[in-house]
Length: 146
Length: 202
Image 1 (tube, one colour):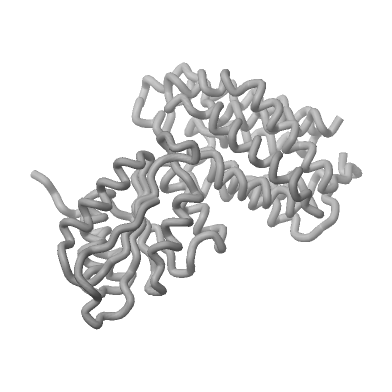
Image 2 (cartoon, each protein chain N blue to C red; image 1 turned 90 degrees about the vertical axis):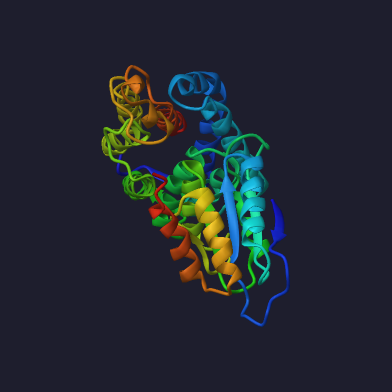
């Protein structure tokens, strides 16, 4: 897990929604976090954390990295968790069902991983709430490429 | 078998026996996972159940429910693949169904596991026939109404019956018809859990 934030200082908006990016691959999670933060540019500070790879550091999903990342980006306004596939989806769902490993207000966001991450971070940087961040990320499914 | 009474120590023995059989069969699970999965099922399950045994030994829970909840949590946090949240949900939900009872009957075990399987089906969005662990768990739990040995046999039969199935869930589903002809690794490890249960119930 590593944390980064968008540039600039909070411009008086409320506390930002945190974003966690969960991928089977640590480099993918890290790179998508860097991409989303980079494309979000300045504006409010959005805490973004990558939780990539499995418990042994290889490809997979680590519940501990996810919990740690969610706690690290939680500022009290909720945490949007975006995932790639398979065990990443199931692990976050089961952690949310568990009830006490993720901070209150942590939510699995149904969105495409890369496009959704950019939409989530940009939207969060406007000071939007978790519902708006989740909706924007989900809307990325509708963006056609041909 | 309705008179059988199962306490926390029994459930610790079950998890310990499951870890041992998974350890013995880890290479086979990974082999089954090579043509249709990502060749990590054996190692993932080995790591998960080893962590369960370590946790239960370090802090032996007082009740059957607490034992399965602790085991389920440990699987979710340590397996690293989809089998972690799936088996974790199975055990945790069964453990919750037991409540605070110091002992459970075989029928309560069956009902608890049935609740766990429902939660697994919901989590994975899958049904029997999709070539998943459900194909061994569902017949195993049904046969648990008869005996532990019957459950082990039925789940083993269920795992073998996944060979001609077309995978509809997980990575194997991307292979379409090429998933046919392979035994599902998750159904196979589910059958091992029932084999371990039958072993400790003797």
